[in-house]
Length: 207
Image 1 (cartoon, rainbow, N blue to C red):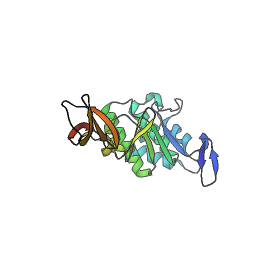
Image 2 (cartoon, one colour):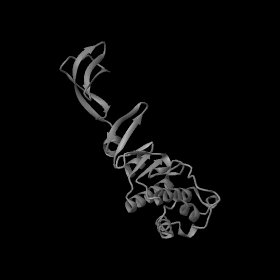
Image 3 (cartoon, rainbow, N blue to C red):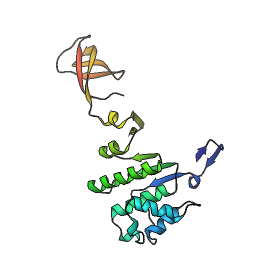
Image 4 (cartoon, helix red, strand yellow):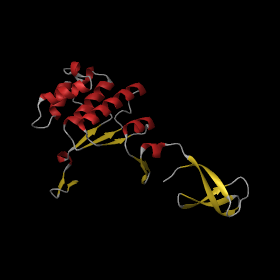
């Protein structure tokens, strides 16, 4: 469950103020775009909010169409708007653009940026696309089996590895012992070296 510190209580999933965007849209096939969005509209909000967000993503003229008559990109825009329309405190995006071609992904990224700039909802985006991460993220957490291994800005995490000069601590059987990132590491070397020598390690990342 989700813990709300202000009231000191645990909230079940349906009571959490979290928006979620799927890869497969999750739209009701028997409802029009307008009906899908009105269904998600919070109490107290009127249809003006639906109209405004449809205008923002360029779907006003398609408001009466059902999902079966929409392209993949149009469906994804509706799914994005539906997540934002509930006024969530956090948005979860599980590779929502992965099924689209690169041109459409770029267009949808722009739509997502526009919605975020207008509504100011923080989000957690799962993505394997470096370009998408550089364009959308302000902070990146890199995951590998077992957990998080890096955290930082997109530029710091995704920048090409840089050569690093390190001092040799010991040499044995074609390998040199060095400190890399504060950790001892045995690395193969092309020629014998001695403690106190300096060598260059290619492709090292900081952190």
